[in-house]
Amino acid sequence: MWILTGYIEIERRFLVDGREEKPWRDGSLAYEIKQYYIPEGSLSLQEEVLLMDGIALVVPSEEEVEIWAKVDRWMGRIRIRNGVYFLTCKSKMSHDSAYELEWVIDAEKGAVLLQDKAFPHVEKTRYVWNGPGGKAWEIDEFEGALAGLILAEIELEKTEEVVALPEWVGQEITGLSSWSNKSLANTLGS
Image (cartoon, rainbow, N blue to C red; front, side):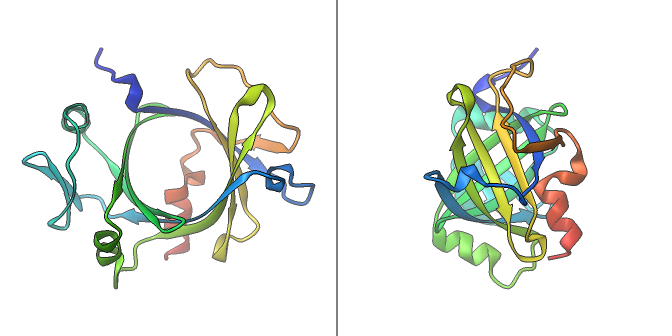
């Protein structure tokens, strides 16, 4: 079986009741994030350069080119985190796992690609909170039309990994596609 494990994201996701205390806000790293979801078919790999709408964005490594070629369907997004632009491409493997390729891209190119386009998007503040056992949790407090929604996720080394859940996590939503950030963005019709 073909697997390059360094490019696999395994995560569990949960709803969070924001009416209680929010310990992740105390001393945690925080990032302002806007994520724009790119229409399918906008990204292409030509002569080992990743393009969006004909604009060269990144030159992937040999391993990344190999992964790109072997996976049929990629979901792309541009994330702006504290002013830095990232291009991320994901392809679902199972309910909790996906191939993930991510690069920093030139801010000017990123701004041009997003200019005058109504890509579905979400806005959020992400907190990185160190939980039990030293595991880092990412807690997203959404803004705009999704204000009040809080989701938490934790990345795992393997699907079977057991993690201690903080008392403030609620219902698990791992694998429920209607709770993905892309689905939430599409629901808003941004």
